[in-house]
Length: 188
Image (cartoon, rainbow, N blue to C red; front, side, top):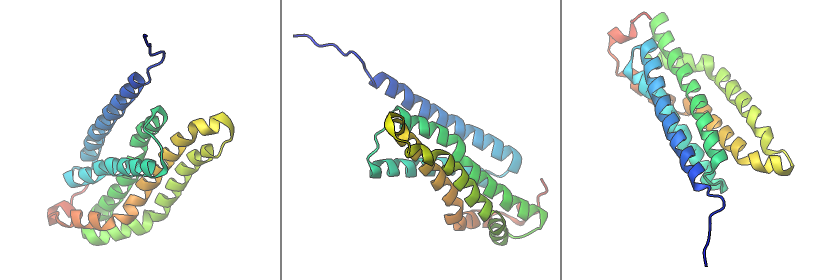
């Protein structure tokens, strides 16, 4: 008796996992370079770079909770999510730095002032981005079933990244408050 594998999915899955890891590394490097180049502060760079793994771990937790498997579509959604989820963190950090440099506010007050100004925009961005992908999950037929995991995984990663700045505001305050006075008065 002999057997033959007519179609081996493991090669494609291994290639997809490799692409996710490569994209994650590229995203970290690009976020570090761009944020550090413009803000010239390693703490702000670290906050923005940590947004990616937190959102991805949350997406994996959601996938596990719902019963989604790691397949080509969910990995493709995670590759797309890597580029999308860092936006909210960059917006928050840049707004805090702008408040500190333009108005001369201490880090704590700058964080609260910036969050009061941009919280509505963050919620709107998150809802709009999620609204693009969630309707695909409700499509009927084979297409709806096929893309359900993709759309829900991507939407959850976006919602997690959008809610992180709103929930993790004390982290930003604590991280920025350790900066010396000279850093607060820097003009960019």
